[in-house]
Image (cartoon, rainbow, N blue to C red; front, side, top):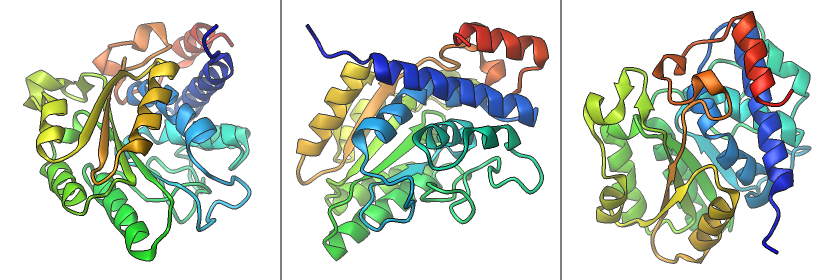
Length: 272
């Protein structure tokens, strides 16, 4: 018998429900790309990363940077599921005076290691964190999730050059390759593929996986930890809007919130 991932699947399902709850109650936000990374984030926070929800600023923790900061609903949903703050607070997303802003805020939200939103900046910050660990002799690892549309930003490749130059083998970049950005298919807007060959050319160890397969996700992160002398890029093929029937592979749900009928349909799709 192979290993069971039922517990992780159920956690990821609840994370997706949290995403929908947040975006619906905000009446705005980015559900498509949040749903596509729910499995990756679930694995990171429940299996891979060394974190303490009751001590969010613990110095020895692994760091996570959501470079595609507009998918904050996914990060908030997984942080609340992990116990960093009450799940009920997800319904305050983007509300005045809420600490759950439209993009992650490291000063106000427990568990957020870097404020992000301007695309390309997150991976650069993650590189700085990884280099800092090298300089100070700390053994924490740094993880960052990039959008595939975000990879059209030149700063992403400056950061990749930096990461390889400084041999940041404590850095793991995860590219959410769902194939869609706000204006349409990434290959039609400004084709950044093939990502694997580009990251390899910049000096990365590259692993390509199905970003919804927990066995593949686990194997990729385990492999990344064995790589020495270079950073790792995990190219995760995903489905934008994963788990909600009418959002899957539908570009119009990149940055739109469901109204009541669609909200109830989403919850039904997610088994609520």
